[in-house]
Image (cartoon, rainbow, N blue to C red):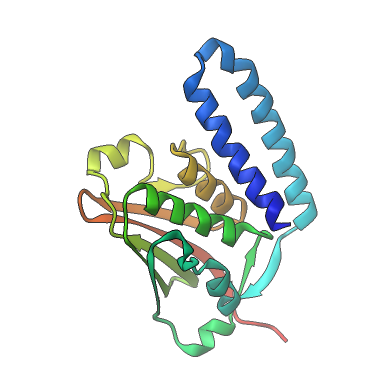
Length: 198
């Protein structure tokens, strides 16, 4: 299963590179086909997962913690009461890992050496905030690429960001990006959480 996810991630990367290498006219049909295929895969994924799966916040944190094999120093700060770790969130199978892989990819691309995952709560949500110390972006760049707030109907550019946005949107969660030039970038993902029912 994880090999399939990795292959799909690599395929998306290759398609993006091919799109930039070829002329617009040559790519238009391919992009349309890929778009249709992506839509069909997304619908299949939704039908397979139905409403997703319910996991505890502790499991979500475990699935969302980056591996240290990407050359980044990884730190996890949990700023929630221990009982919150037993709360439940709904996720699509594989989505937390895919989001994390793309956050790491974005951090490495931004020449970060450190990535901090902070776990907190806000308005009935568990919030996972990833902060890197990469090159960051100025406000104009951040606005231009559409990363200030992701939500239904918003265009988000950048492959890693697109993958994060799509997975967050598909789960009914919310994501927000902040960045400061020469300081780093952070993305906060809010997962609606409920008390575990036994």
